[in-house]
Image 1 (spheres, rainbow, N blue to C red):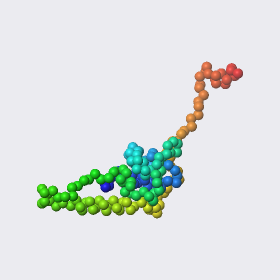
Image 2 (tube, one colour):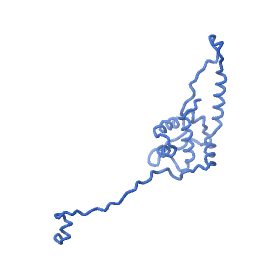
Image 3 (cartoon, rainbow, N blue to C red):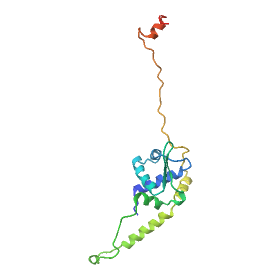
Length: 175
């Protein structure tokens, strides 16, 4: 199993989705602003997460992403395997005749990899959410909105042209 930045960010994004699951689907734009993760990067990650059934998408206004199944049934290993895939490392377990003088330790690294996977498979998304709540992470009742731009009110001006209807009415010429 590879531990990459993409995997770490996918775990962060999944925690955010799980934290805000009661609000409804969360758009990737909101998630991108809240977690400061590139929108295109999130789109790639969530395509993989959706393919593995970890998130479900909702289309239309108010749409976005929610959990594909209960947070208590999703593990960190599930998330990492979804975005990074299984490790493609393949080692020959037998020592080659030419390598008799070289120390071969693939069993050590294979054992370490198995232990890491076992540990990550024991950590559930719900526990990470509970830990965030215990740390006092603020949950947003509604998705983050961009602040409204300040608009100045401009009064319409009356033209000051002698041949305008307004000028003629002022002099009592037009009725």
